[in-house]
Amino acid sequence: MSNNKWIKELKIGSKPDEWEVKKLLNDFGINTPPGVLLKPDDLFKPDDLSPPFVVKVCDSKILHKSDIGGVRLKVGKNIHTVIDEMRSEFEGCNLLIEEMVPYSGIEFIIGALIDPTFGPALMVGAGGILTELYKDVNFRLIPFTVNEAHRMLRELTIADVLEGYRGSDMDISSLADLLVSVGDLVVELGDDFNQLDINPVVFCDNNWLALDGMAILNS
Image (cartoon, rainbow, N blue to C red; front, top):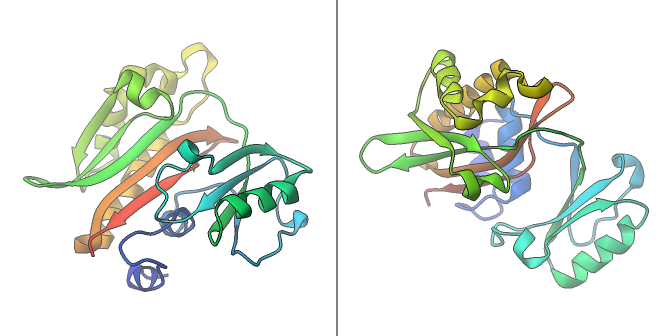
């Protein structure tokens, strides 16, 4: 899918929802959990995914889903009940249902923005609940090389977890490649790009996965 086509297909032009953001990430080789989008009248077929599930409200106007009860974790046989409850609470909104992937180790955050002086820049650091606690992040101007991505990661305070600390098996090389892919995405979107936030990014089954994503485009 070309980026122009992706932008034209957005439900709300400058504010893609999580499903739309993840479609773009996948186009650039950035993996996300298996999932399906349910429109308000769609039925969920249990054979589509394997439990346990994560059920999220999927609406570009709702940026902080967890704060308002818009995320349900570890959903199993009660999936249809949870879907009914979410639809009642968030009437008219789509729902995103994904496989809840097992992972261990540090969560990462990857973001991109437009610096008013220097232009597009990428940020990586401790993600999830550690984002505000540690404020351990590094920035680079976009574009950059994979060697620069490696340096960026090794400068983090939490870099030890990427170097086998206490048996950690996270793959620093593929994470560096992922950073370059995010930079490529920003370059490809060009003047349409404004902001991107991927949090958390986790390591699961020898693969990095983006569990959530938010993007804002220039209108």
